[in-house]
Length: 134
Length: 389
Image (cartoon, rainbow over all chains, first blue to last red; front, side, top):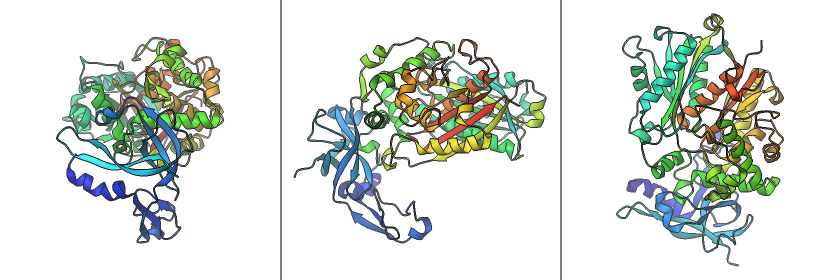
């Protein structure tokens, strides 16, 4: 994959930047230009927002057979996480063993290296989640 | 809108067909369907091809032109040839497009093919290509695999409805039992619940035997208008067809124990056919994993939401059960050459409705349903066929 594709995604992936519909108030991650509920009424009213990074696990899996770029990490935890503002996303859960992870567990975003595109390729970074530190 | 019929069906052996090329299998299926229909090349008005990713699997795009050429219809009748892509639903969407082209009055005889050649490359690369059906920017890049998303659906279904690991395994057991009766299936050997539960983890709680294989294969159908079909003794009517979309990312769906695209596609198909789920005698559903079959038989209305696991345990979906599902062996045992699957499912239903399914025949089957999914549920197509007048 080439550099511009990664650059384009940096805002969302590094900083949890998404959108809020100025018409109905619903939050979205990643950014959307049109609200799926308000359609045309939302055009030009989508606001950029940064999410808190706190959320909870909706479901999870322990991955044993990953794509090649992720092999060094296996087994690892993948989860669907619901952010406290409402949107859901897919991310790894780290600093937590497969035995500890639970549905409903409170988590928070942390900035990590995701993988690298071969030995000479781009290293890409972004969010992973860890158990919430209270 | 005009009535549309299936008047011919053909399918190749599914499996790791190392000695055969994409065009070999595509043409074999097409010739079988045309012979079955008893038509000649000059009768064909158009060709629709379901194919997910020939560009990535075999470095070949423009496959509709290629198939039209090698079935001998490009240089003579110069028919329109159209490739359709919707991941795992590619073949089913091609079928619907072909249906529409006849229903609209534009064409009278149309061939629908589905083909995929997945074993010319290694498993790792093939799995990466398959994962292109999920959101590459917001799922795959974080480490998600196709299997891991199904695993999350499975865990949610297990936690909410009490679906057990053994019940999931039964889906695979039944599909292998059916596959053992299908001479074209990739796997023709029965397995036990222990086989599934002792296989290695792919993504917990799912194991190797919960997931469909990588396959080569092709299937084809000949569709015709009523005028043409009336001259044909063995026509099967397309009673209803529904297609729906949903978010491409699994996480954007509020409930991951159901696929809304399936629910909506089924509603449209049942309404158009004027039937209810209980009227269906035989069904082919999208079991890319054991959990996806359980979710499908619930979403299609065969069983109440949450009761699909019990239905598998009680063998209600096996041959001889209340509603035999995946008599072909399904994606799990017949095999899953992605673009071919949606067409192959309809080939099975056509054979069942004509009473030509051999050892896996559902006696007296008059109404059959085929259900295909793209990705984790971003596309769904439900087709209902019948021989009841």
